[in-house]
Image (cartoon, one colour):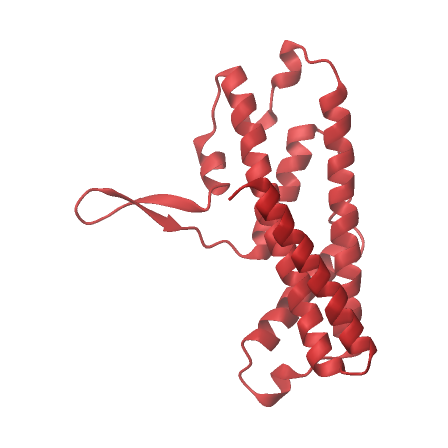
Length: 195
């Protein structure tokens, strides 16, 4: 999928968040709240997918320049992983990473890549993100009637997560721009996990 198409999907999902917020502000906290929580989670999942692709492209470009590859790292950034089937042939199978694990991996990989500390996991943002995913899973896969209920705390958590996530990737992009503006010498192409 082209980056422009992926960015259009992100914009659509962001607009879903805004529309859902309008619905619950108008008084339909049940439908509007559930839709808001699911929309925020979907937006983050889609964006993490894009960030993962960009991270893989950056690492591949740097690996081409250094001649050093970490295939295990690259395989974690791919949508599919190779498997050997019973006939001895290679097949691809979709990777099953939780959004929480994948999000943490992508943020930490950007930190290692650029050598800049990010305060993404400090404060309440990361913990709220984990809570949001639990709420999203509960309302998306309800087992009992109570699982479909949504509270104002759940909605406030989703709001804070959206702000935290957008601020976190603004910081990643700031670091990326600073890093890319420096002239590069041989040493600056070294990536810690490729050594």
